[in-house]
Amino acid sequence: MSGAVDLSALKQPAATDAPTGHAVSEADFETKVLRRSMQVPVVIVLYSQRSPGSVDLVKLFEKLVGEGDGSWDLATVEAEPNMRIAQALGVQGIPTVIAVAAGQPLADFQGTQPEPQVKQWLAAVIDAVQGKLPGAEGEAAPEAAAPEDPRFTAAEEAIERGDVAGAEAAYEKILAEEPANTEAKAALRQLRFYSRAQGLPADAIARADADPADIDAAFAAADMELFNQEPEAAFTRLIELIKRTAGDDRNRVRTRLVELFELFDTADPAVVAARRKLATALY
Image (cartoon, rainbow, N blue to C red; front, top):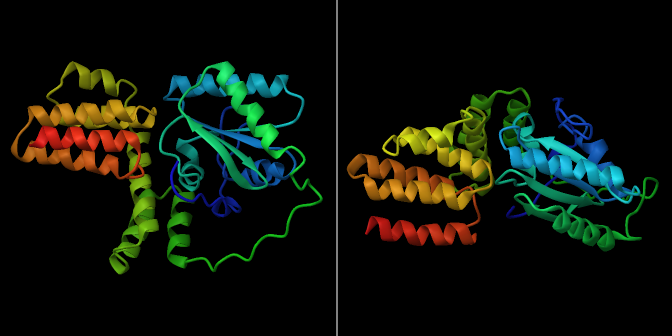
């Protein structure tokens, strides 16, 4: 994750379903995560059925919460049908795990982790909030919220309806009026990426590996690798393709690679390293 995370946008969301016992959707995020986190820390696990490693991580957390003493709670969120949650949390890869306490993100990690490291992380989260949460009857009064921008509200409502094109148009309208609006830029990039990710074939990486010259297959494979929290693999795939192409094809691949960079903080080590490799490949 990078930048500030605003969970307030998820207080009145639309309903979706997810397939696990601790599943949370936009419809019950406020109750099961924000309000519950006033009593105990809530660990959110964002996963995808397309990522077996993330599904295994969900199973690990379900086992651990079942063995626990009620000192923390679990919320599992399937990323694709709950795009607004992923966007609000600034998720850039799957799986992502975020601990929320008193309605605010406390700690997070990305990628799969072995059980001993997960237990250590959980212990640190629980220790950090020991005796500090307000509890169900002691919730702090909410801070005065800034007036909502109706332009962003329109985009969010389109996402709730599943109208990706409408949401894109809403963000594009904001950028037409305010080309430097960083919030709209970031939201549009994430929206387009998650939209593409939903349509990826399960064998996208295998298809690209079987035909290294197929640019469209390479794009799909890079998206899949990025979605599976393997940015280095995605960046390397496109940089190697740049080395093998020229003219319009090379420009097309370079443009897609830069678009993937923009999904991350500019200081992210994976992006910094890949930009150096890109410069070498181009010159």
